[in-house]
Image (cartoon, rainbow, N blue to C red; front, side):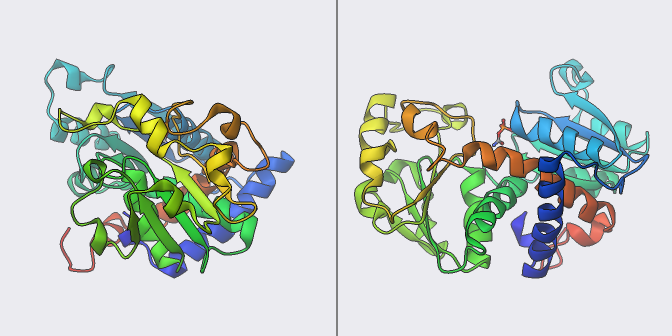
Length: 310
Ligand code: CP
């Protein structure tokens, strides 16, 4: 989680990410800092961006990569999560990247196996490398995010991206705002150290960046969920709405996007405003830096929280 990092870790990751970003853009080969290492991508939930960018990041650093998805693994034949984790760990990988629908899954894999583990998204809990790549994208544009007003709008309740972003942006001293209908906000959001809004036009006042989130219908079971039409009318981002933000306000989206719902297609394609593909590009560089960092750290050290609980 972002809580496992301190500001110095983040600075190191960003400095190293900047080197990788420039090299990737220039087509310069990376130093093979993971030469010969083996990385397993263990994805129990679907992914386009995260899976592909961890694979590319690891390969650019010289690692061998094996991708496992839940559908093709023996977990679909009834094997337990613990047996799956121990079986793969017995093949002695150097690193593993875990995505799972359960909060705490990556931490569980790290504890059970002792293998250095990166969380690629655990339920609605955290998606730390997404937050790192988001803040890195903004840092490249602005120099630093401290003092900047950043709004996250949409389905905050089910969003691991929002949780990790709030933790990281607060650590970096940004002025963070959340906007969502009351039904899509966690009950304790007013204790997250952010300003909470329900009205998007009000929330957008003076913002330097705004991040749109999709409604995660796959994590919902009934309740008061707005239709796509209602959501677009109240919380959809478009050029007209953005007039209320600060001049040059950047538009972000972690993907996958639902064009015409949380973001208008013309805005998503406006390269002056939207940095969505820049976020994806930054994702490879940031994950290269994270893999380097995690490969040189003891998993037990990295996954013990401040309270000492594993
Ligand atoms: N942002 C993100 O996690 O996208 P994927 O689900 O495609 O990995």
